[in-house]
Image (tube, rainbow, N blue to C red; front, side):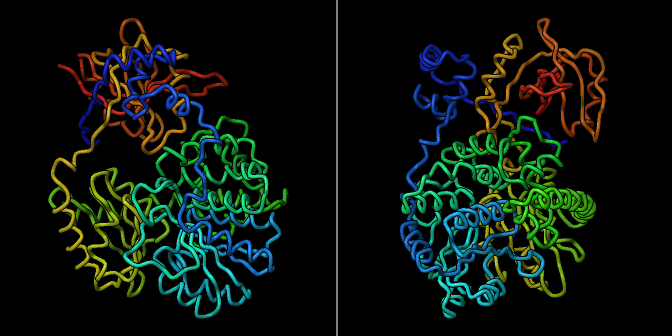
Length: 569
């Protein structure tokens, strides 16, 4: 297990803590955390705790959205054929489903298209445009892709097809010559909506379209389930607009009227349960992702758009089966990648890992790259080689801007795209050694030895006598939890073990511990290797943990989920 460096949040001004504690009637520990998350006024805290859909920003604040809406309105008026062009991951699938359903309700002659990962790769492709020509399409609306597709947009334009781009990925130096580009990352860094995932941008377009056509925008709330799915699956920051849309969207998942999503909740074991962002990320999203990772994402978008109560469960079961197959591929590829990393890489000195192999499935290497980042805490690129070309997926750590680093190697690549934490690329096989050398050189320049030590931010010291159901319920108002709005981490020192630690499931540590007469159930996921040292230890321990309620036998129980342990003495 990687040794973590504990970093404690700064103690905020005591007078501000006292004032806000009086105003909000929240515990002082919670107020300290809110202040450290830049919520320093009562009104801000009230909006954070109870985000309202009326607080979302005006969609017309996004550059390019007026031109996009005008072109779509003209297409609706003239009954032109429209194709929604998505991507094969959850963000792209939910984005495409949302725009398709909205246009369909508005009476459009609309179809959708998602690229095959194994044949076309990411983004707008000539093959997809040729399919649009076959369908006699007049207008393509991209979702979650397109901002770097300069040649593809020209190819479509030369053949009489207009293109509207909606995206959230980093733009290149030059932009495609589209009818409109709606992307918060095009333009100034302080543009509203920087945090939006592709489905969030699609939702803003839907809002603007409804307003222009004098439709009731409240109707769009039924599609917030899709927004929550795509946003959380894309690991987008759960702040600002994303937090508002996702909080309401997760509630909408539980009461969705989409037969496919309802069926997916059933086969996933979530039907009738309270749904959290974590369950969306780790239970629902992988099943939607599975078919796109293994090839054709067509089934996933059919699931989210069908109104057939008979077909929906059939598709949901198929997605569940595909996800089991994907998990097996993950495990095999991870073992091969770790063996290769041990033989070929010096992560500490290179400060990056670049691995390539023939036979890897390009649909799972992104997941495996994330696992390797967790293990070594360095930026990682995995490349699946097929013939003379390799398709790569990359994942990063907080102190390394992945997209910028890959851009420094762009002359070696056939194609690339992404953002700070995740990216994709394609490369000629004979260029891989040079890319590995260049990329690790960039990593050595950009990263210090200190950057390679993973840190654990601890929000607050906590006395265990503060832990009760009321405190946890108030903590749960921080939800949905995710990037930039993580579940608060507490630290309690000199905790005593009660009984013996033991291992459950796949290497999970369980034990009981307490202080001052309070004893709690504790679990540390993937921390089984600590069981033996804890059993041999005779002193107290310091614990960093999150406090949560878990459902067990139809009752909620308080549990401490361990983030790290330090042995005293």
